[in-house]
Image (cartoon, rainbow, N blue to C red; front, side, top):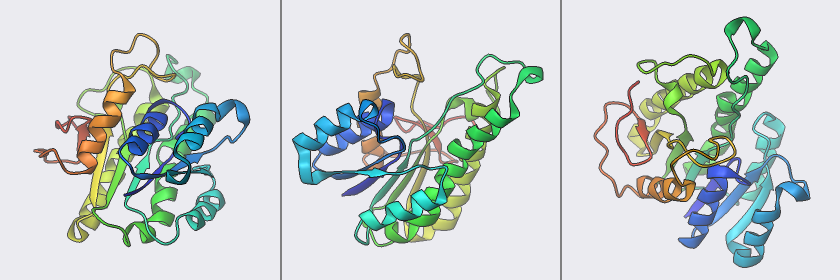
Length: 231
């Protein structure tokens, strides 16, 4: 199985990379910042897994970067995991929001996956048992809206709509599309008090990718264990 993961050098993206390699998959780890300080764990994984892991420069805010990255995959791909995201403008009232920061959140969290899917979908259609996995959030639920986190929540709502549209478009080709709430994870984004181990989330997401879990949901917005999320 050939898997592309964006934002693969930390947090859930790094754990998805680790678990994928442990399962024997070929992983293409997309990274925006290739500086040494940001690459230590991926570099160590490359030394360990060598031919299984390809680290590629992939800035989801740059269509040129995304387009260039497609040349690394030799014609086919089985899974796209849109994981790269930003959580900014936390705890701010709407009167204090930096609108440039809001635009950045949409550029990364919503338009980023669009760019990746736009350019990698032709390769995905050449793959087997294909999946598009968009890492969403419970903050993308209209039903359970809470105050604050405006850029993040709004961009994840839009990501969920993107996932639904892709599902409708691609279902006849048997390409699985899921928008997944990964849980409140112990990562840089989730903070040290978060209860969920990102390695556990990663393992569960691979079960969804491999269609080992029967999903009973009207929509493609689910949690990492396959349970329906409220739209």
